[in-house]
Image 1: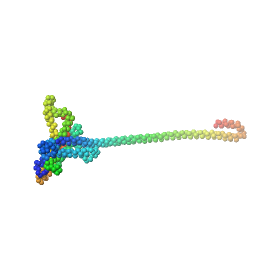
Image 2: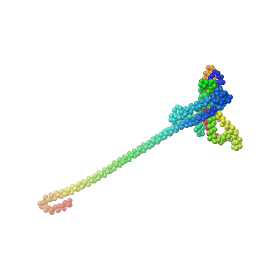
Image 3: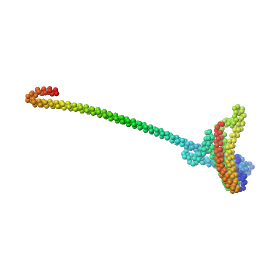
Image 4: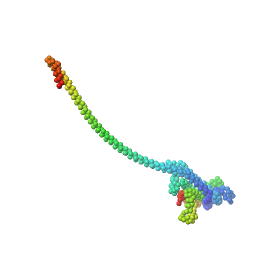
Length: 156
Length: 300
């Protein structure tokens, strides 16, 4: 129960222990605790961010699909319109072409008819002359009558 | 019991005497030289120039045990999954940290480690109280007589450092010094002196103020001094009383079979109850030390 040097010894011992604790024990443990707390908080925040991002992505995907669907139906409508237009155009073209062919054919036919008629006329003239020659050979002067007949043929 | 030749009174006195190493005073054959005191009277005569070897030994040993394990945990502390020791250390440190945060609002990196050291160290020193009172003193007696050839009755060995007022006063003094240091550092000498002299009685006019200074100083000074004294005496008193009861129970063992059994039951019951006191006193000491530090950091 005597108070003696132990008092001072204990004070110094205590001070040394506190110093050691303050220097080598407290900071690393508290540091580890803080770091872990931060890591957990970061993890939770990241998880929340991920969830949020996923929600956004889903929303965007739905929008994209909707847009694509709209575009597709637009394209189909346009294509159908274009197809019917092409059909109409083709119909018009075909009609014009047919008309053109008919006109050409008619002209050709007329030409042929005219040529045949001319040829026929020449042949008739020659034939008539031959016939007339044969008839008149004996009685009519060939030269006088030829002039008369040529005049006649020009009137045909 | 320590020996057949001892009376109950001798037995108790023997248990309450520290192993003292000191300078022999005038009047002894070997006056002026240093050595172990063989009787309580010798230890007393040595006065201030003596050291309680057992107190120092056990307090330092327990402190080193505490620092060793905590340092081991701190060195390998990871922010990942903690191991068993780290888990325990973290649990203790978080407990201390939350307690300190509750009662200490200032910014001082010293306070929390100080609280941790106080709590664990005092708890460990108090725990020595649960070791049966005769085991280690008897062992010391055997070693003393066997190795050093001393009369075992003159080998004193007190294994609970907190039943030595030197230990509790030592800690309280260190805390008192810290509070004084931070009081002056935070508030300045003027602020600290004003705190000591301008309250609790306050006055508007200067003469009355001057008149009140001695009264205020007396009250505040008593309050200031009573803090370390009450802090250390509370711990010492509780543990000393507990130790005394263990010693008295131990006395019963030698008085017949019935009392032997009764003493066994009593010792167990008192030890269970004492666990509460041990923890509580360590906690109170720590909390009050933190509160005193808080008071040193704030104007009031």
